[in-house]
Amino acid sequence: MTAKHILNATGVVPGVAYAPAAWARPRPELPDPNSTISGDRTESEIERLQVAAGQVSDGLKERADHATGHAAEVLLATAKLALDKGWHRTAVKAIRGGSPAESAVVIAIDKFSDMLKSAGGLMAERVTDLEDVRDRVIARLRGEDEPGLPSISSPSILLAEDLAPADTATINPELVVALVTVLGGPTSHTAIIARQLGVPCIVAVGDALRDIPAGELLLVDGAHGTIELHPDEDGAVEAVRIGKELAEQVAKWEGPGRTADGEAVQLLANVGDASTARQAAGGVAEGVGLFRTELSFLSSELEPTIEQQAKAYDEVLKSFPNSKVVIRTLDAGSDKPLAFADLGHEDNPALGVRGLRISRSSGGLMERQLDAVAQAQSEANRDGAKTWVMAPMIATLEEATWFAELCRERGLTPGAMIEVPAAALLSHELMTVLDFVSIGTNDLSQYTMAADRMSPHLAHLTDPWQPAVLRLIDMTCRSGELTDTPVGVCGEAAADPLLACVLVGLGVNSLSAAPTALPAVGAQLAQVTKEQCRAAAEIAINSVDAASAREATAEALGI
Ligand code: PEP
Ligand code: MG
Image (tube, rainbow, N blue to C red; front, side, top):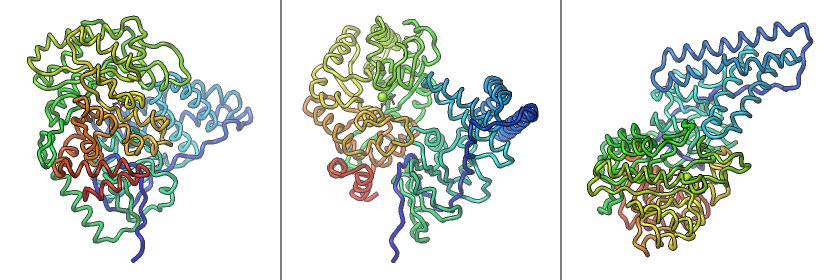
């Protein structure tokens, strides 16, 4: 018997697929921005640039004509960007200064990307689109095919370095049965779209993926993050059958969240505004575990008034009139800058004045937001239903005490995100002044592992399966037990069905995630007892690294 050849990486969308590999066409090698041309070619180079950009734009528009909804919007936006006057002007200037068209594109797009990156947040996300346009125009200038989706006529597993939004938006899930990328993280664009499409997806495989040739038969397991090369055919077909069965169980699962032996685990929704809350209310969510209030105000130039804020909160509260709703106070700064709560440039914004630190130092911003929440709570008339309020980035007992007093003065139930390691280490003390906590595993992983959650190169570190992160969660749960304080999880970890079992075993009593992720988590919890979860948790926190924690847990639970 030959040894199995398996690659392990970060699984972000569960599901099993067995099919041949197809590679996305690679990005073109970038030309030297310092190349020069002779003066007599200036006008013809400008024309070449305009023709190539026009071809890119037309091609994207044509694809938009055959797409609908979000996919069509993304394609049209990218088509428009290909003709954007701003970068074209800079490119033409570079050609007049002696650059060939290819180099001029690089110079112009680099300039605009730098501007967007320094603006940060959502603006920085546009850099991916701009770089996609750059790569397409360069390919056209060279007479090559544009990078991105290959033409696929039978079910395939799509392999890529990373995918541009314009490509992921047009994936046909009947033909692309799984997605695997060299780069990307659990929050990358590829992962988000794959989750929406329900296509099994694994990211951040690294260099080893590049060695897999097109046509190689692969068995991909999105729940376990494994890619098996040339698997045994019968075994692979059986794995796909079991995967389908699991998907059917998930589709049938209706809640509420509980383990096989009946231990309740509240399954709650992460929402960003009234419309996502209404959608969540139509599904299996038992309430809202994280309302990211800053997402309602990302484009507000001025601080919304108390009335405007109360209206936004009231609409979310009304979506779940009889259930728990956890409102998080503004988590401004770092990757979510708010114009009205901007304290200026910082070299290290993730470690800077963000979250509670901004709300506290911005002349009454926190107090006004809590006034608005209190007003919304009384207007929504939520008889007996719980409105909880928590602050992001709490790191000290003094901060927690200050926040708790402001909440209690307004009749609100105070809690905190546990997303800074200091808060986990001090969780016992924090719980003497707070009524609940919710663990933000996205930031807790980032700060515990000292690894930027936005970096595609560090996804193996910003992994909530890291034993160091699990131990901080364990510590928080122990404090919760000793002080009888509810402990929830509202980071991406709560969306991973296998990890959910470990979290419940550690003592977490509610899990909050994107509403689409909840059925898979609920169906998984329904298969295991609390005791099995406890045993799995013990194994996971004593594992040497994230991959072995995942593997040992799956084995212990027989999944
Ligand atoms: C987290 O950090 O895990 C979290 C839920 O907050 P956000 O992702 O909004 O920073
Ligand atoms: Mg956070």
